[in-house]
Image 1: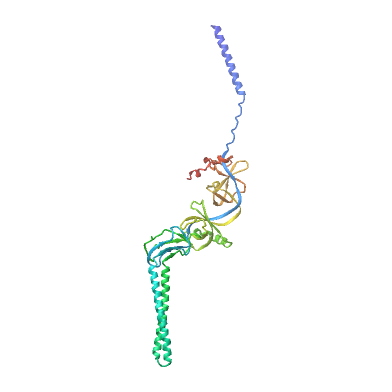
Image 2: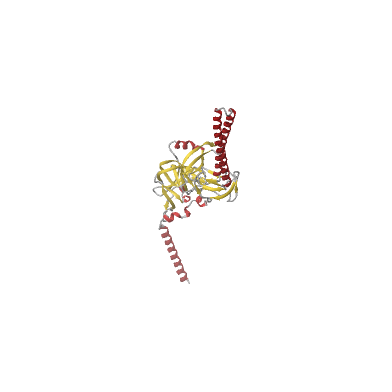
Length: 391
């Protein structure tokens, strides 16, 4: 029993020594250093600042206005017996559009001609009587009173013939009114009177309206503070004007500025301008609402970047610029204009600098970036929170 107790004591002492050794070894051996994680690069889409000639536009909203619009009305009353046009047809000046029954007016003309022939025959007889009375009077066989009476009758017949000539001209004019002709080149609208109906000069809508389409004009407005600059550029030459669709994506036609209206609209603080367009493809239509761009001038060596690169902050516009080492910084900029998705930069950038166009909301000053290209650059998750909210 005593021998067993001694053995247990020896084993316990040995275990304690081994534990102390392990503890000493653990304390003396340093732990291996942890490997720092690689820096996180923010994926972005970027582009370089471009330099080139940049057109400077003034933009306004305008309405297409026809130079001439004519309602075809009859100048006489009669039955419509013939229509010679199709609705929406292009017609030219002098084309016959419709015909009114000419028979009553032809009969009036024939009557006036007959009256003139009757008066002409009486005039010939009166002239012969005057010649005969004059010869008799020279021989004492006719009194002076008879000769004077015959002269008066001759003069009366001569005046009657002049009246007949005037009535004949009026009858011919009325007869010509039986044909309704186009007074201008243009396009016909919706016909208001059908064949067989009686047409009157007092009909409010007339037969049809004809509107000139080529050329055509656009009247648009701009802020009145642009007036001095426009005047200055007009003194140098004709200014070009471009008409675009309401969504500002489709170019409809290119024209030239004709005039600035002679008064400023004080209630809105704007000026009215009128531009002329050839409208060769007829993409401008009277009454159409369009966006007008007045080409004021062209800036040489202007700096442009995609419009999505422009961000708005408390202090105004800014962009994220990527440095040569791949880190980003905020750069305040002044934007001259935004046109066709390109922003003209007045100050804040240099040519060939790299700016972020998508993925800005993940950035912070000094952040490393990874530029994406191709399909990766189309990842919608790169859009800013503002862009995601847009429809």
